[in-house]
Length: 320
Ligand SMILES: C[S@@+](CC[C@H](N)C(=O)[O-])C[C@H]1O[C@@H](n2cnc3c(N)ncnc32)[C@H](O)[C@@H]1O
Image (tube, rainbow, N blue to C red; front, side, top):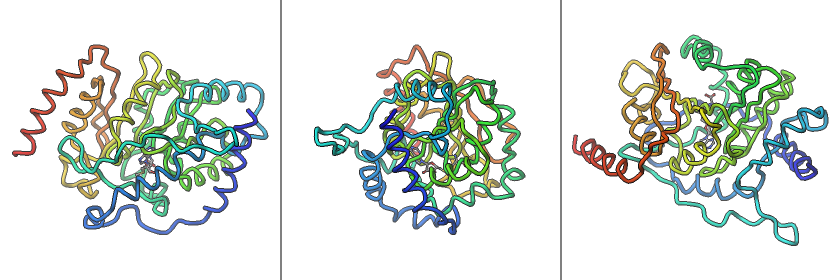
């Protein structure tokens, strides 16, 4: 627990340093997307990877016993913690897999920069994306443990925390410490204590194993530079019967005013999820801009045969 407290202290300093940096629009031009070097992501990941794994928001000094216990339980399951040498120095994660630029026939988008975070909490978002309709169709229940993967500044994490009540927990994962800083500020402003921010790395969300009821990814999956490692980690984090819910802007719909690189077709999402051991169990098709797709673990997943059929379909796609 002491280590978590110390980590929390370091975090607060980082967060204050990052305060007040909202200015740019969310997405850059397509040319920039091309030019964007995944090296930056790798550097980012190497820099952040070993630093901090987990801390509990701003409420560390005020958490009550129950919260503390639940937090301990969640943290106990954290898979990859930075390893400490005898002298206390943190060792870098030994093997960082190379980031991908393309995956299964699609180009991977660059990560949305934290300087564009204001776009996530823009006033028009509810009208444009019908966020409350999405939330009311998630199937939330009080007491759930939910991961808001790629939580950004916590637009959804804070609402989820309220909807699942004080017996539930939201684990908010992001790779940008600045985003988590904004999330912490908003938690403090709103007095929310049941969100646990986790600084993930690009290939490892550092989730507890077998403890999550639902992983929600809103406009995040298409940015993963390490989709296979991320999906494998999320798979392991789920409780039996747990679900992954993906929201992606609809590529099939030219009226959705989002750059093509930040959109995905339903077929492409499904191809990638199936190849990684998930099956589609439900979709909600009434959102104005996004697909909303529910996946569960496919118990009959046969990696080899799936890989073969996926190769065929990707070849078919690239020759279209
Ligand atoms: C477009 S924002 C969406 C934020 C939030 N889900 C929302 O809808 O308000 C995408 C977020 O995903 C994060 N992200 C990208 N790759 C990630 C990864 N591998 N693990 C965790 N977060 C990631 C980015 O840092 C960014 O904050």
